[in-house]
Length: 587
Image: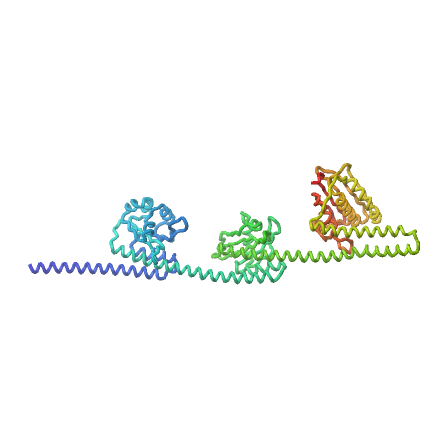
């Protein structure tokens, strides 16, 4: 009896010892798995690295077959799948969108959720439970990853067979989840700090670049060198290649300046030319900034950003920067910087253009004053001389030559009147104070009257003037101003006609009356034909032919004030034809 009791007690003690040993070994194994998880997570610096460690070492520590690492999704999505192991990402993301889900329940409660059988999942989460089979999950752990009382992510651990989750496994799962949550929190802080540091460095670089740009834009008021300096500064600060296109036309901007790698520039130009959406042309018309990307060819990627140059509503062209760096992709921050660069550059180009216009205007005024002084000096001198001679003839009592002297005085007075009238018209037209007194005007009769008035001038030049006029060509116009138009055109024809015949034609068209003055003189080269209607513009040097350079500008202004148009057809050495079309109803 005693021996039996002793044997039974010894067996029980042995069983207890073995159970304690197994429990100790299991605890040691769990601690070893936790240490492995801790070691793996300690080296993780980013959320991606945390997810990788959790799905490799952590999944193995919990005995799972496959799993997924979830983080908070963007607006409208509860979760975003950061990384998966053993399953496909897209089907899982779709299954997570069909709420409710175990992940959602665990996230809201901030407590682990254990599903021991697929049937339990289908009962509580029908849509998600139906998807567990295709994932190969017969049991599931949904472990919230928390730090500082806030859920930051979710670890899903799937098992191939149904199984219970005893207390020690649940404790291990909670411990693994806690380690992953802390690691994820550290990674988020690390990434935030690195991003902040990178943004601070980038902001400093942007400020330095913009400061250097300001210096470049104030160095010169010459648009050409300015464009060259801008693109030189943009490389490599903004890309490997940069170009500034100025708007040479509505459809095809012309390249003004470029800098950077030649081979990259050739590829960038090819990309812009091949752009099917025409975004370079769109940018030249003021479209928002755009990004073009070329498909990598033989390992040679290319990304280009296009930003319009716009200031006060005026378009000056397009700034293009391109990069061959595989990691360089122009994003919102880059486009914002480029837009600032483009705005500053456009403003500087506008100032350069205004300066050039002011310089040209000042030069034109100086030239005009010189010509005006010369033109006025002649008739004033002649007038004074004629007066002196007239006084001498009167003193001598020689009346035979008085009429010649008086006619000479009248000619010089008429010349002075025309010069002062031209100057006065410039003031009126520029100030918008040109008044028209319209009535029905017989253009044929007016043309004959003007020819008669210029008979002496034409005879002196040896020029025969003929009028070919249809009868009854009338329009509503200011007779004095249209006479001034014909006076100017006929005077020019006689002056530049070299004594060859001049013809004035008057004809009627549907809705228009047409005046055409044709000479057979020196003609006008094509490059001068557009600008001769400008103020102070001349197609010939003033030393060869006198004049203020105002006549055709006044003619154009008067014609346009009547709602008409004037044009010229000419060729060097073959004469010119100036054609005026006036609306017959006067509108």
